[in-house]
Length: 270
Image (tube, rainbow, N blue to C red; front, side, top):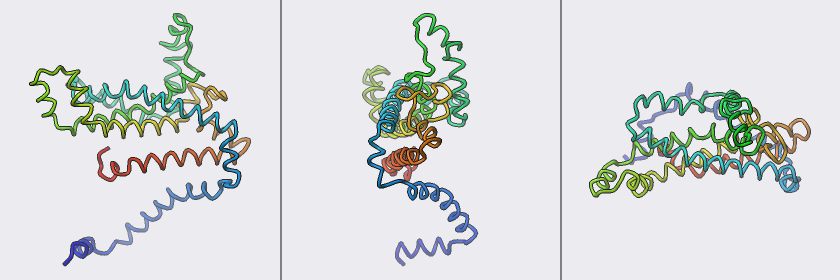
């Protein structure tokens, strides 16, 4: 008996009680995207994509998402290392706090940022008094909001890669006299680079699609804080076809991210 025949014999007939809900679930997830594609104004798509409003929102989204990803890389990689290798007391509690933005409603995150970094916030009031600098309703405020909601994706991915990496290479470097910083730069970081890249891509995609925390903390000012998700929301009230075009761009980005990470998803390495 061939391998394929043995596999079919082992699996047997698919039970209808599982197939029907599975098909319904697939339709439930795919149908809205199909509807979006069917209602897309394909003939005027190039013209709408090159319009000033769409171009401005796209440019701002790309700049803010990329900047937020850089912030997450600078802060998130050391945080992931601390969770995985730092022998931190109460590491379970720290990990829970790090992952809170994953389950926290984005609007609540925006309110929390406003209470801390707003003009009357715990930290924000001192930023304005000492440096004359205010984050809310500015482009840097968008970057901060996006970094807040996106960083857990990077931290989880990098921490998982660090925990699955072979520690013997680091131990060998230590026995050769390498410092912990040198070992991290030359041994640890290169060994977990696939996890870093995957986490950065997920982080960037999450930042690009952020809405709730952004509109709460940074508002919606064209050219300053109106990113693509905010532009979609505003366009629904004035020009639904523009909203569809912007949604198609975000859908294309999401599909591209999933395609880039397909091997890691299927192998379960994220």
